Length: 393
Image 1: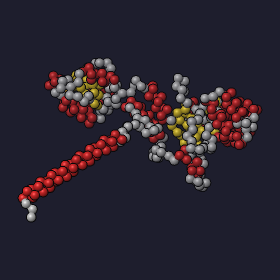
Image 2: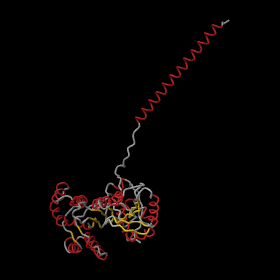
Image 3: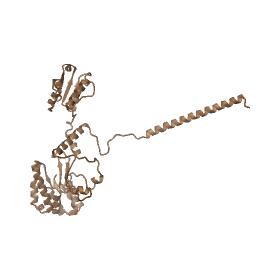
Image 4: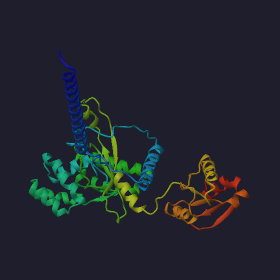
């Protein structure tokens, strides 16, 4: 038999043992929680921070740059549409093997592949050196003739006499008179050159009909990219001597390119293309217009005091519904001077001013930001008057 004292000792011992186990479990939980917290901290510290940046080869544009971009793209689009062009869309990215090798974008005034073939033949350039000599001549817009001549002779193995004869031709440039002169000279004895010269002659005849002949220069030093082109080649340059940027557009005729790309000789598709150096154009215009680009808004709506925000918004909606570009500063109360300075810095021509006294008489004030003159008008006439000032219907 077990007496009561023994039973008590056993119960006490059992309770102590249970308390000990509970303490041990609690300690283990605490350790696990601590370890988990430590792991979380370590995990958090090892996570990479996200850095916001534009992808390689791309850039962001601020509002002034976007204003210029929209203007340039609209001008280009309007010109193409005026001549009956229709738009297509192609991928932003293109296969590398299409754009590398001999299929590259080129920047070079008007000339013709056939003329160059004939000119090189007359000068004694071997047929297998045609492309490499073309690439040398193409450097004349950056290097001197002496440097180009040295490259052709010493690096590319061209006979010195051939180089001297090339020099006589590549310094020639002019209009249809030059074409006639070349046809009457030794170049007019080469069949390939005759084909090219007659096509250039025809181009000048059409250019005269379109009243653009004075803008075209026939230049025998234009020689790049002839693996690509089959006929006429051309570039567009800026005549302002204060701007050093080379050409801003270039292209030509490439009748065999489509069949080459699809590997089907039966697809003989006549093609004429033009690549526009849009980023170069934008950079030039941005520089010239840096002080002339502002908000597209025509009107800034101003209210005096902090109690007229609702009236300001109602007027904005009224202007928007009348297709008048308007905005306001997004604060309840803005000092008049701050509003005027906002107009000046953002080239907003007019401000409409709402004051309690004027509104009680159903009046607005219109301020010409440039002249600082103000007129008072009836509220119901605001749209008509603003359109009159802006000279819009």
